[in-house]
Length: 204
Image (cartoon, rainbow, N blue to C red; front, side, top):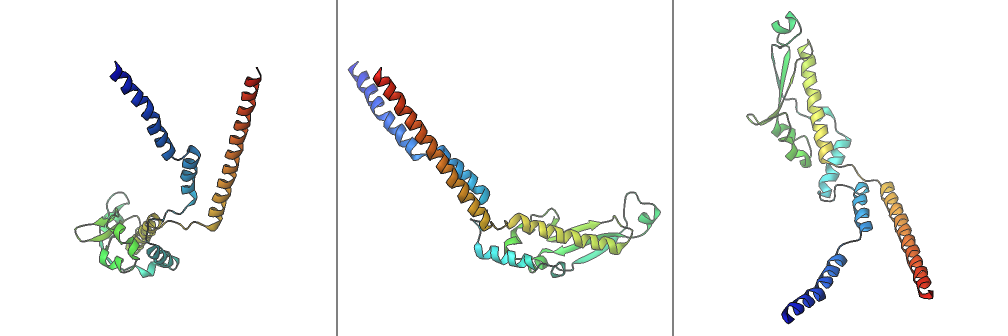
């Protein structure tokens, strides 16, 4: 029995200390909430190379379709509905753009995403586009070109986060300051209320 009581006393004596140390190490709920909300206002490029981001954004500002390679386009007979003209003439355009040529035309930050594109063909290491909606082979080739430009633009938008404006930083600071003030006011009111209740209990 003495051993049992000594064991319980040791547990009772040390468990609260460990619990209190764990609780002290964790940030308050309000602080965690502020951290999560800050992510909405902070830039998402914290872990990215700043120089690479600057270079990519500068490239995008002056980006033009003419900067991309011409690639090679072949034509074939279109399938599906469209009448006899579609089935008898080679209007379907198949445009192939080698990755090595595209890499030379876009910033390094976008390079890893290029071979992850849905249009990537591993067999010839290229982006391949097909178009057959138009009756003109020239129009279909131009459609493939538009698809290439759209894909490069989407890769840029996915890879390069938008810059966080100074107004958003200021807004976050203002919101955080107001929340801290509101929290401190609530704590002060609770403390005063507890003091009043303790006084009333002491008078009784």
